[in-house]
Amino acid sequence: MVYRMLAVILWSVAYAPAFAQEPVQDRSHLRVCLDSCDTAISAGSVVRAMKHAGAALAIAEELGDSAAIGQAVLLRGKVWMMRAEFTRALGDLQRAMGCFRAAGDEAGLAETYNTIGSVHFYDKGYDRAMEYYARCLAIRQRLGDPSGIATATGNMGCVLEELGRFDSALVHHRRHLAMRLRAGQHHWVPICFANLGTCFDKLGRTDSALHYLEAALALFPKSERSSNARCNAMVDRGLTLLHAGRTGEAITGCREALDLALALNDLPAQEKCYRCLFLAYGSKDDAPRALWAHKAYIAARDSIRGEERAKDLTRIELTYLFEQELLKDSLVRLEERRQADVASERRVGHERDQKRVFLFGGIGLLLLVGGLWSRLRHTNRSRQLIRRERDRSDRLLLNILPRTVAEELKTHGRAEARSVEGVSVLFTDFLGFTHICEELSAQELVREVDACFRAFDGIAAKHRIEKIKTIGDAYMCAGGLPGPRPHSARDTVLAALEMQEWLRRRAVARVGRGLPAFTMRAGIHTGQVVAGIVGDSKFQYDIWGDTVNTAARLENAGTAGEVNISGATLAMIKECPGFSFTPRGPVEVKGKGALQMFYVRRTA
Image 1 (spheres, helix red, strand yellow):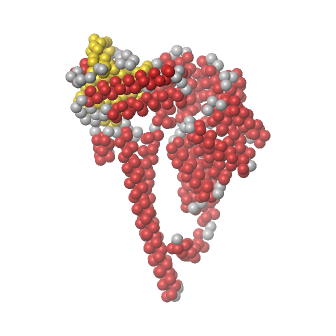
Image 2 (cartoon, helix red, strand yellow):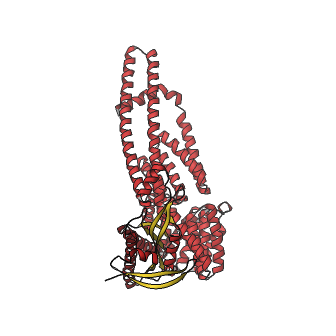
Image 3 (cartoon, one colour):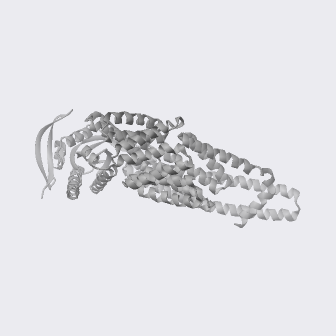
């Protein structure tokens, strides 16, 4: 610390007069960048908002102002939230929380709590969202901030609504509206009306819901005709029309809302639109459009929550590259500072007497030694951090790709596709999935599918089967990858039988509790496939070929609870003990003609 204090004293004597006006200019520019970012966020312009947030953060870090750094990363966190990149948003918001605490800025801390709550809300973590909204409300009440209290009250009403506590939610929404009207904040009225409308809809009072939602859409000012809030009000109105039995109007309304959500790149709103259209087309027995809407809904949902592992991997790689650049830049700045110190000492030697020359020379040497020692410690810490992040990145990569493919990708920058013989491809598919979708909430459906696929992952790993991918409610894996392996066909059949047995036990448990349960078909075919990676981003190990298509046909021609195998797979396992086979004869399959099929079971 001594050498740093001496450095500040020397810098102040030598350079402070020349730069006396610079902080004032920097702070003025900082304010402009923060205001411009806030305006861009309000306008929904993600690119402009991110640019201004980055500029503001650079200036705030240069000034060393904790509160200003907190404001800049808070705004950047809001931009990440607009793009539904919740992991990045929470990273910035956690940093903002630390900055505001260090600066003693309670107002900034309250706004950060509110934004973290919103991230958890949009990511369907309602308990965590309520916790942060409550923290925000406590600070707003202590500060006596009416507008902030109103915002926290409205947000808590939305969480209560999602938790199914509709009467409590209605009380909060009405209280929120009264606060806004009392404060003369009429631009909030359409948002309050929209919240009341969705709450009435969930209470089954569709007439009241439509009244408030249509009033909200009429009250949005022209400047907000393309806002995210108006888009959400439009899709909520479409869902209410559907619940009221006005299916045609619901489809029209949700279509209009979808066009606006696509224009705004609002992924949560797109998810709601596709779900509304799926339910509407399903109620009209329009199967093709219902299937289209359901696939789009699943894709939108996965875009928000299913790509988090890929986002984490990208973030780790970027952090690794950033640390490398930081290390290089730090060494360059150290050399520049050393050269500047030497030049300064020379000027002082010409102007001061010998005693001061010795004094400043000693101080310069102390600064250099201290700086080099500090830099050496920083360099070692940076290298350790880079090593840890690289190890973590490798673990994530091995969770996505087979080890040999991952090693080839890291070594050469790409992995060549290969033809592999004797691969046994297993397809599974849940029966009555659409019907069960209607009986379960979205959260319950996702939890049940996740539980099933996690069990399948464990079974596949136990039998050394390579998981390929999931497609909606279908699960695909293969034995004998990434290279041929003895008994891979037997292991694949054992894995399929164990999956069916696990699903039967779970069905018995769920039906006993009065809950719907899945049943499953499974099909296996053995043959040649082409395996590899395609694309440069969000890559995935996949397989192609007639063997894959035939396995899918076998699954489709099977029966719930059975494992349907082809003659080629039978030839690989018929000598293996512990199996019994039931011939099904030639079965006509679309695009393949008649195929010999067999049901396989375990013998006692």
